[in-house]
Length: 144
Image (cartoon, rainbow, N blue to C red; front, side, top):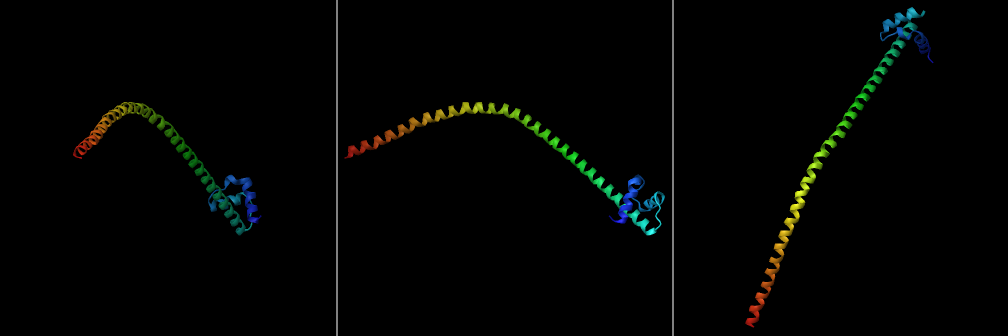
């Protein structure tokens, strides 16, 4: 592991709550918590700690947003399921009531309508064909 990371993790293990997102503040806290003689090394450690803290905060926010979106999605699904469950129950009752009422008159009217034309058409067709066939034969036979 890199020397900067190792030193940063050692400081963060014992004093993480004191560090924040601001580099200048982290440099001051690092001076209070430890003794770093090199200015460059102190800046690098403070910079790495700042970067590490910002990354943790960013990940925590992303995780929180994901949790909130999951909850919102679950609520939407629950509302959709509730609406879907209620809608067919409300629609099924009127359809059941209306369907038998509509079928009953159709069933009653349909056989009556079918029976009447069939009875009327059948004798008329037979009557029309039979006399027409007999009538032409009779005059032809008489002329011959």
